[in-house]
Length: 319
Length: 319
Ligand SMILES: [Mg+2]
Ligand SMILES: [Mg+2]
Ligand SMILES: [Mg+2]
Ligand SMILES: [Mg+2]
Ligand SMILES: [Mg+2]
Ligand SMILES: [Mg+2]
Image: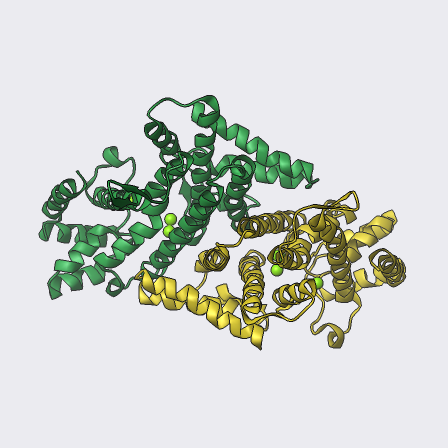
């Protein structure tokens, strides 16, 4: 609630600028609507985890000003995510997002959503400039957002050309590619970015010496958080296949949607030539019988057991 | 030629990073192709004017290193423009650009072009980080690109909702809106940005005192360059109507395309109710007879003479 209240303030600030520059009223209202439709309404765990991380690093609860600044950085991640989601839905020609129609599907919006997504992205830098310009770590924040944006776009590119919805070619899949896509498209912005922003806000330096050894805390955070991101994505991929609608809040569609999921990549890595043929003929098609055939094959290769083993290993590595 | 050679170096640098991060080969080739297809091939006057401006400010020819850095800033403007053009062509559903098919029209590209446009934009910050991170004005460059990007997107938004190709509503047009669109969508990035980049590279400060008076050189540059941008755009709008194909290298389509051009806005500002009716019924439609009717009306209201007067005044103000 407190975190969500910060959004209203941010939105008003962004709108205020447009008013002060005499932007036509219909354009101001358009932008306001885009911000309200696309930015809040998600789970907000990325954004709120900046606040949590700052509290952990400081080892105490935050003053009002500290809370506001941490929450603002959190909302910058939510803006970045909104930019990615609005555009991803266009690229995937999706229908709904967060149980409402995708923004570009709304009457009169259409392809204008491309520019709207850009303006969600640029709001980040507007806010950083206004609230962090005086801080010694301002340029670090700028570079971190830029770098993370680029990484996510790299992941999106590989995902788009590896697993287009309308052209199945399992020859393009591999566990290595899966790993690249997960890391670049999701882990950097969802797992590393919130923590790294909090570290900058707490003046954690790029490196320091501790009992004669050089410590690089941001590298350390990466080493912990990227495997964590991978673990969560693999769990998400596995649950898309194995979870009940009650567990995952939706019906999994990764097989039908030709997703470069952990499941298919494991299957490909152990498939006999006959099994590979089954996968080639049945994966990524809008046909529930073919989907069922792929699922049967996942059972044949003991995917559940393989996931259990992966999870066990991951606990060892991450724990 | 020398300026164009810098592009090859930039492209190789951008690609090198991807190779070093083990991006899959097909994605690397995709990005290379996007850079080569979308970035060079324009008139390059925005980019080259950074080099010219640095030479003028320094009052001498540039060393190799200075030339490279100025040219790199110039190519960053060309990258920004490529980002705008690739996405604008999608929003306008255009067919060709620079006498080749629009990027998104190419086989297999389609909506992936949205993400490609993002990656053209982010290349700017990649290059600035690599080549200007040590400079005292680095953060000024970052803010200038961010600010200009946002301004251009604001102009694009107003243009898109004021003059959609498929829905004519001349009630939304006005000379004031024309002025806003021109300034935000074109002048900031085409006229102010090259000069401001050159000024930063030459360490021109935000303000200084001269014989007891505070001078703000960037504000001064804006005051000169924004009216210049407006002048050039109004000339462009007028020539779209009055120029022969030999003069302008194409057949003007602003009337048919429902463009919020200077010509229609002048006509609206002086039209009698009868003339307004003619404009409402004939503007912005894919019909050459209706286009001819609008052109006839432009003659009735002496648009040529009005343009001559505007130009005369502009010379006074700008000269
Ligand atoms: Mg999607
Ligand atoms: Mg997608
Ligand atoms: Mg999933
Ligand atoms: Mg266009
Ligand atoms: Mg356009
Ligand atoms: Mg024109």
